Structures are given as C-alpha cells and as structure tokens.
Amino acid sequence: MSAVEGSAAGSGAAALVATDVTKRFGSVEALRGLSVTVREGEIYGLLGPNGSGKTTFIRCVAGLVRPDAGSLALWGGEPREAVAAGRVGYMTQAAALYVELSVEENLGFFAALEGVDGVRQRIEEVLRTVDLLDRRRSVVGTLSGGMRQRVSLAAALLHDPRLLLLDEPTVGVDPTLRRDFWDHFRGLATRGVTILVSSHVMDEAGRCDRLGLIRDGRVLAEGSAKELVARAGTADLESAFLTLSEGATA
Image (cartoon, rainbow, N blue to C red; front, top):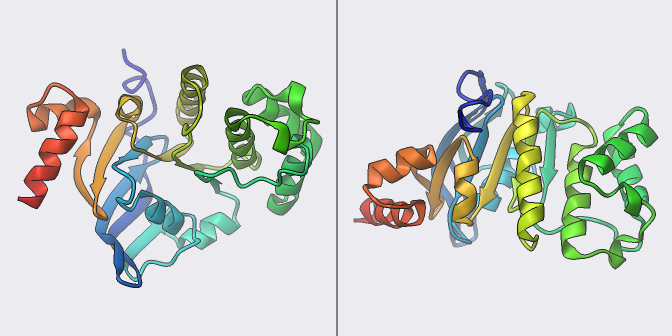
C-alpha cells in the first residue's frame, strides 16, 4: 500500500471549496475562474510554474486577499472566520521571521498572536517536530536558509491548525530536509489535517494525494500523479503537464 492509499484522503468532507475564483491586480489577471475542492485529511498540491497564480490563490484562502469574483469557503464559511478561529496555519514562501530575535522568541511572539495555551511546552513540541530544539536560543539571522524554513514550519504549526497552507515550503532546502518535511506533512494528513501545498517541483507531486495542474490562473487538470500521466499518455508528470497545458490552450 502506498503512502497515498494509506492516508485519510478521499473519505473526508470538503474543507475548502473554491468556485470560479478570479483576482486581478491592475492589468494582471492572476486568477481566471479557478475552481478546486480539497477534502479533510488530504494533501492537495497546486503544481505549476512561477506566475501561474498559486501564491495568489493561497493568499485568498488565508484571508489576506479578497477575490474579485467567484466563491471561496472553508468548512462552509468565510476564510477569515476560519483564520480568526485558529483553524488555518500559513507557511509563506519567504520566511516571515524576525531575524534579530532568537528562534524561541520568534515562536513565543507568534504563539501570543494565536493565543496558544501552554506556550513553553508547545514551543518545545514544535521544535522537536522540526528537529531544532538544540537551536532554540539561536538568533534567526545566524541560521541557514533550511533552518529558517524549519522555524517557519514550526510557527505555522504552533496553534495546531486543521488546514495548513504551504507555499513552496521546500524551496532552498536540501534533499534530506525535503524528505523529512514531506514525511511530517504525511503524518499530519494521517491525523486529519488538511494540507494545501504549492510547488513547481515535479518530483514532489507524487507525494500529494491529488494535484491541480495550474497555469495562467486556471486549473487545467486534476487527479493523482498517476491519473494525470495516464490521461496525458506520457511517461512522466512533467511531460503530462506540458501535454495537458498544450491541450488546454489549443
């Protein structure tokens, strides 16, 4: 049995439902009628090149950007309601940390914002999760890029969210850390956490339960990596993406 087959994916109710979401920034139409449904306990990957709309959509889900048209709901309600209730964790592509503060001080600040109980114990738990307990007093500015990514993930997990938004979470990390991140993501999904992750790295796609191939602000095709390759009649996912993209624009 594969990791995907052994997960909770496929049986949960919808955690996220987006229908014909559009968003324009001046003359740039970042989202052009994007529709997607993500189920509870599922790892759903938005896979596409830079500039395809992945980050804009995640920011809409996080309640930071309002769509111009279409509908977007988390558990049937407004995204900002879910965020205010502490049900959403967001790991940005660029580490949003205070570089002059220590790891522990950063996490303490974010824990206070989220109203986390038992702060010291929870900080220790998330630092153990990302294997940084021994660097808790290190100033963030002295850490490597990969370590900062781990601190960012720890901050997103502090309040035990039910939906985790991950925008290119493995950018700049080494292969071993990338594997560890994905092992942890799978463990979270197995416990019922819903994960929406963006990536342009094709070899990560097979780790998702389902994928939405996104280009020019639209989902071109959806399914597991195996299903998409079969649909395109290609040997690998990268070729499938190119084939399906060409078919959608023909």
